[in-house]
Length: 304
Image (cartoon, rainbow, N blue to C red):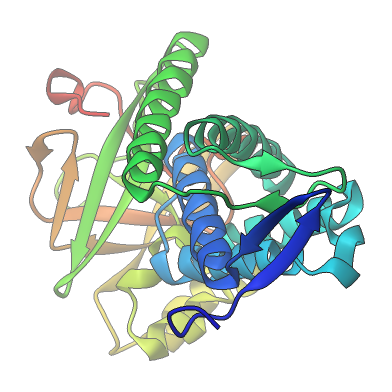
């Protein structure tokens, strides 16, 4: 024991390297948290901190296991792949865009890990297990923060040039709760609230879980399976939910479950009370955004 801290000693030739499992756990957890946060930001997904922290903790445990001499196989490709899939699933839980998120997370992890390891003087042994040596935490946090910022800007700007529409930050408030997500400013989206004639924000129901009371959340889990009419009948008296008719290609008369948010902010502009329609599925096949807003609204106040 040294300073009350458990340690593992590994001999490499004539050199002795002291490994600290607690430092390995913290370092791997922080690195995974940065990579997962960047993945969520670039994919336009809401930041679920409990899920992100849980996934990062699992990554930290995996990092410690890789240090154990009798678990040398843990640093192999297959264990790494399984762990990465577990982290992405815990953090985001999206089946339709899982592979894209996994690829993005892996790319970000490689980029961040490579830069951070270089700047904090990481060593890599033949089995792929990370060894901590003379770790400078100031350098680590500086490197990690710099990587997060640069990669976010690079990937975000690349995505902007890849599509003609713009993406904007969106904040929805209801009953003192707040959800942040990314919205596509789509000029082809013309759905309006029949009662007020104002634009309607269409958002993925799964992205708004943080706005619901427990009883509401239990019912809304079945939106995709049982439909908006069934949900509305069971939500009676629980909130300001209603049905909103719409027309689309191949749909003459459809219905969306909607509610009136206390406030909706798109970019830097607050629109006050706004109707929000719940999409039972994803609105982006690639997971780049979780809501749709009229492209003619909020464009002059764009904020990424």
